[in-house]
Length: 154
Image (cartoon, rainbow, N blue to C red):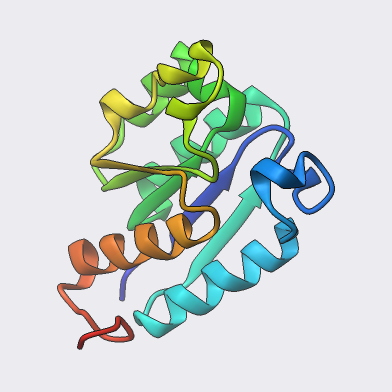
């Protein structure tokens, strides 16, 4: 049996649905957690969905993923652009990692155009809103199980 996939979310994502809805949309963190849990279940996987505003907590969870997860979806929020320590923790993983951003970071302020996480990730999805999480989970499922179960066209 595979370990769960971890879906980790960084600072301010707890404010989804109320913060800058023109950028991040109206869906809440709870809505996103349900989407991820349902998508993982469709693929035959379980999901551990978490959010923290604290860099050290995120690093601890990434380190926990080394032994406790089959794959990682990571939206590090603002830490994507500033945390070498978080990128180092991700680099130490041997499981597949997909970086996700709700907004297109390349259409925003220039400081957001660089992510320390991107260089350590298998892939990056940005600008597709919550659909990015769905795509990331589907990609992880293919890597982990080899299955396309629950995906359109299968």
